[in-house]
Length: 116
Image: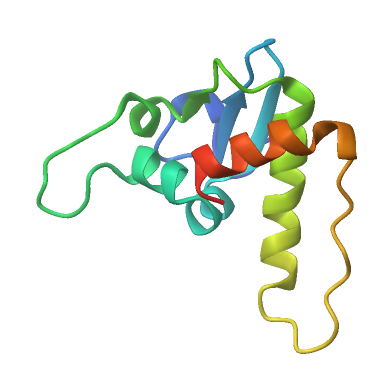
């Protein structure tokens, strides 16, 4: 995926961040979607908050590694983040988000960790 906002490798100024799963799968996600849908990613990408002087490596590099989340599970979490943003202002019926039952426990753990 190309990054019109800059090079994903350059970190903070980029429109996208890179998510890396335990098995090495790399996914690119818009920084704003990550921040608005995940409290964990928001903390990692924006630091500890105003005036706290904390800067996380993920914020500087624009790369977040998940040593305990597999590629397929991370892909599904990213799909859900997009689903959440697309439907957050919906006034009508929100379509169901399909989940593979065999993946549900891993998704629950990942979603809990990411606070999605």
